[in-house]
Image 1 (cartoon, rainbow, N blue to C red):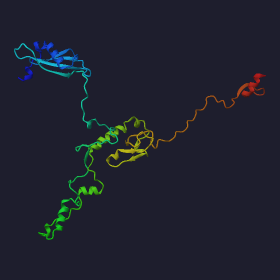
Image 2: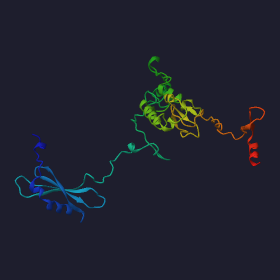
Image 3: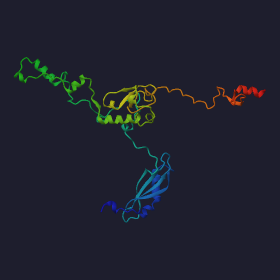
Image 4: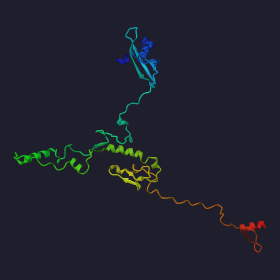
Length: 308
């Protein structure tokens, strides 16, 4: 049977009643007047009880003085074990410490700040493969040193086949340096995916700006293509009036500054009037005398007749 199963869940009676002993110990360890009311007790094991007292000290809201008392088997006297100040369930605590590498966010760096990159950064991988040795034609190359030593010797021992050979022409490291590809590390596949997800979230097809755009960036004349594999899905915006000017944008992104969306709309044509007041409308006044037709007068004639 394990020790955990032998412990009593019920607090020892004598230890539970030793509130005054626990309070005196807490007041002795704390500053005067900072030990508050008794806040309960907890059984720590057989004949071991911890008493809790409220802490009234400023800056320790929710903390409690914890005084542990115990008594030996068959003993009638309770003894003091320890007095500590512990945080309670609603105590005011400092946030959990986070390393600076995990606290850093995009935009936190300022002028003069240096950000060291971990040697095992998953976003990077070696820019070229090969031995980390000096170039074959370097002054510190082992092959070059052997060749110089052989040329300085007045008498060469051994057959010509055993002489040091000239340095090998070219290596992966030397060719990479010659072609301008001397970067020690480049973006790994993981680094590419992380960057693509970050750019897609900021300037991608699901942003409110792209949803309201008349067309996507893939057909915009202000889109500047970029090289590499990321160029298949991203480019750089070069429209000074766009909210993404100078930013890496997804080809599916878009905004109101699209190069082909700046066509001025035609001026609206007003609807024809219901009552045309620009011309005279004829209306009958009385039947004609010679024929059965109705005579027609204008609005002006009708007005004159009305005044006569």
